[in-house]
Length: 131
Image (cartoon, rainbow, N blue to C red; front, side):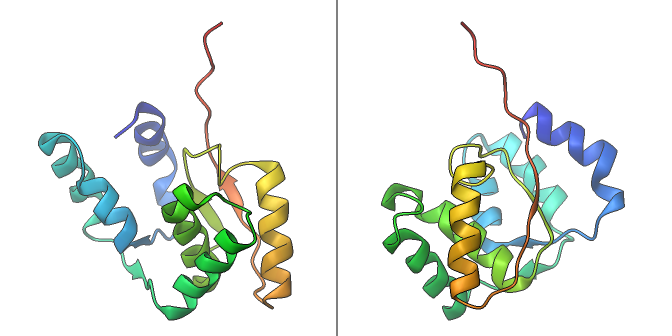
């Protein structure tokens, strides 16, 4: 788990009712086996939001409207799952496609068009770039 996520988990997780998705579990399973085991232990007791047809359809719409590029299909699924489930806070380290003010305003317009009322308070931390 990245350092920023570990810090948030230690300091903030008890202030929220946490959920996850199978997509997050699949992503957490990837990479170094020892690190994956550590990540999965943190996620194992959390309820999961569904990745159902409504979520997949919304994710396809996010991609077809070019809000996110096709290569960001997993990111579109994350956003769609959170929106359909009515998630208020979305914890992400992805500042390119999710925690991005320009993209988020486009996502909100699409959700409004789809009659999905969702507003995310995004919790993200960007690692400073080296010059």
